[in-house]
Image 1: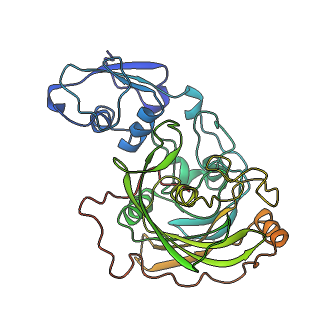
Image 2: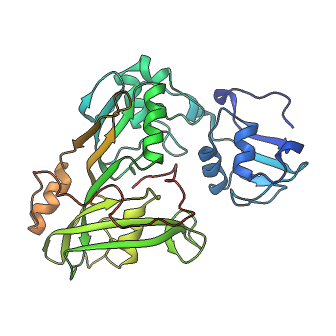
Image 3: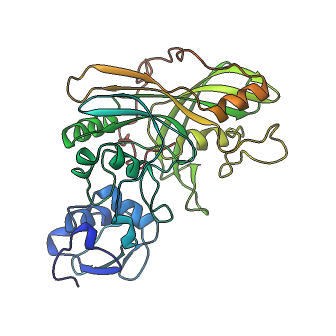
Length: 351
């Protein structure tokens, strides 16, 4: 058992701890967050799901209750993850002030370091862009300024916190659903209705644990609304609004409808039935609305579509996006009553 708590930068290899008496029947992820307070609960949820945590020698779920005397074994990520250095990384700055930077994330850019992506991430680029601000925020999760995420192959608008105050306020805004996130995607197939709603539970795929899926039980409530902007060559250009922040929510929901995003190799958007070749999933975070952390004023930003997305639209004969998204209702649709146990957005929220 460890005798002293090392700093995040010193943690590597495997560490074993004993559950103390005051943690009786706490969830495993919560117990770990209290044992290692410089790491977040969400961080340990990721560790558990990645198979890097064992309870009494066995892999378990984050919600597993622990008992005093239980042995927790955690395999920390590779030490190199914590050796963050500034690196020049290309991204477009849409606007910035002393509290936030709003960017248009290009495709093929990982947001933060993780096993398999130790450098060349957006976080490395932020340190290069403004070293003093972001270095001051480095914590155990190695995500200075990051309050929400986009997948490596998803492009579009992101807001970055430039100080700890802004980070706290923005994370609160995302958790309380005070933000609006509107995407555009090229979807395989044609839709009979111009607008629609997808309302399901999303959880881990029962077999392929690195994927998410629509599940009958044990998932988290997820709500997506969409509007068809154009159809051509068996594909549809969709404007999509998510009202909950579940991991891969858009990709999972449209795959569930048997209309995957073209180029999405994980959720079915590949094969001979795709009319054109695309380099990645055609999903773009088009509009982002959030309360400014300092003033509370709602700010709205548009991220221009990148060249590969525009080229796909041209090849398919779909409308070229130049203007603002059309309104898709308030943050919570009128008349919608959430379930009593509706959980907050995932800390893993990424599309």
